Image (cartoon, rainbow, N blue to C red; front, side):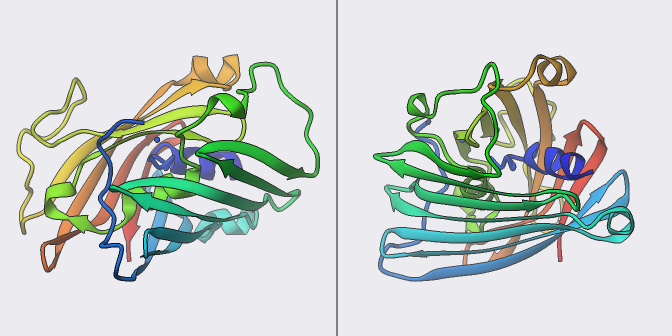
Length: 262
């Protein structure tokens, strides 16, 4: 069940979110603090399955974000599952570069913790407890310079942005073993992915599509199941020219999934 929850969530990115192109989410002015806390209900096939919360701050060219995904509703009756993570790094010219990523997971049967540090943008897996044996096809972290950790990607995609920055994101992600990509497409340029022909949908909302794609380090079974996951992001205005993600609809391995902002 933990795999179902996390698998559907990272199809957003993503979260996976979301990630090494020049198109990126623009950061807040480096001279000002910008702290935001968000809470989303996560549903799977119409049933409430979890709660996603994250809190992020951008200040003086640096960012720090914490996030938690935990089971709720009918899923919690079966098993109490949680995933917590923390990431921090720098923001320069609107581009996120992580410095440290820590995650703690509890499947209800097994607990684990992983730490990934970065040197000049290159990830290094520092620890994984309990220790895990290498798998065929694991991606060497040394080759993953410029990638984002999963939480930074999630934050970058779901954070509030200026109106002229909506639907603009294209980066690669690396979680310690696997490489994937996350891309948002402009509303008027779907690039082969089915998307609304208009970028607005009542109340000045903006809808865009995105794609999470598995690239390397996934098992043959995972790649045979599905490599590309399409999702839809809906932004709504919150004043001062800012837009906020209010809903994410996800094409997951386990059926339709959604994140809905509380």
